[in-house]
Length: 400
Ligand SMILES: Cc1ncc(COP(=O)(O)O)c(C=O)c1O
Image (cartoon, rainbow, N blue to C red; front, side, top):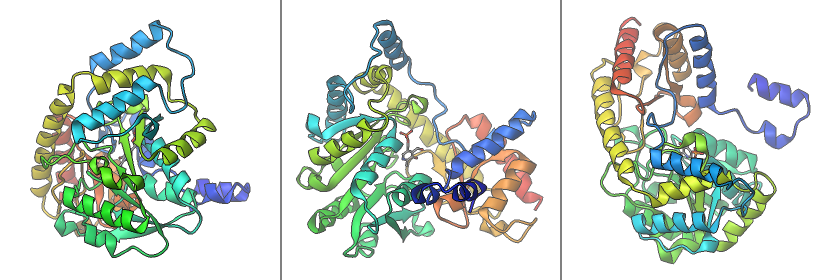
C-alpha cells in the first residue's frame, strides 16, 4: 500500500478511492523533477507526450476564440460544430458513419474512458484487459468496482493481441473488453481482422468493446483501422479518441467518444455532474485541428517512425537488452531482466530508480503496466536527446 493510500485509509476516505493508486508515470515525473530542481541534467524518456509544438493554425483558432469572446459555457458534450467536426474527420479517415447524438467531447481521452467505464461497469463485472496495459485502465475499472481479467501477451510475438486470445477469457460475467491499438506501452498493433472478430463475438454475446484509439494515427503498419467503421456491430462499441497525441495537444485536454446514443447520453449525464463542457476555447482549437490541414499529422508520424527505428537499433546493440519492435505509438518496451541480480537490481522499479539516480535517465518501470521485466522508454523526443540517453544507458549497464 502506498503512503498516500495508507493516509487515506486512516482518514476513512471511501472504499472506491482506496481501491486505486496514483499513476506510476506521474511518480517518475515527480522524482525526475526533484533531480532537475537540484541542477541535475536529466535525459527524460519517461513522458508520454509529443515533443512537437501544437501546430500554429490550431493555436490561432484558440486565440481567435478568446478575442471573439467564445468564453462561455457550451453544451455539456461540446458544440454542434465540434461534434460535426469529430464525426466528419472519423468518417473521412476510417469510413465510419456516426450521428450527432452518438458523439461527444470530454476533457481528454482519459476523461472519456472514465465516463465510459463508470457508465458500463458495475460491481463484480469482469473486464478483459490485455497486458501490458496503460496504467489508468486498471485503476478506472477498479474505481467502478469491476474486476480486471488480465490477458497475457507474448513478448516474442511483439505483445500482439489476437481475437482468439481475447475469446479464451470470456465468461458469463464479462461485461467489457478494453482494446488499445496501437498500444501504450508496447506499441503493439492488432490487425483489422482480429479487431473485427473481437467486435463480432462481443456483439453476439452482448459484451461491450471499448477501443482506445488515442494512437490510431500513429500506426506504422500501413493498415490504419478503427472499429468505428464496423457499422453493423456498432451497438456495442465505444470508440475513444483524443487530440492529445495526434495534434500534439496534450495540455489542451480534448478527447471524444463515438458510441451508441444511449451510452453517449449516459456519459453526458455523468459529465454534466462533474466537469460540464470541455473548455470552450479548446473546442474551437479542436475544430481547427480536425477540419484543418492534416499534413502535420503525417509529418509527425514520419518522424516518429525514424525515431522508432533509431532507438530500436540503439537498444538492440546494447548487450543484454532485448526489445520487441513496436508497430505504433511512440514507446519502446525493452526487457531488462538480464540485469536482475546485478548491482542490487531485482525488478524494473529497481532498474528505473538506479538508472534515474546514477545515469540520470528517466524511464517508467514496467510494474505499473503489469509486467515484471520491462521498462518503458518514450522516443517522442529529439534524436540528439535519444542518443544522449542511449549512451548513458550503455555505460550504465556496462558498469553493472
Ligand atoms: C492509451 C492511452 N489512452 C488514453 C490516454 C489519455 O490521453 P489524453 O487524456 O491526454 O487524451 C493516454 C495518454 O497517455 C494513453 O496512453
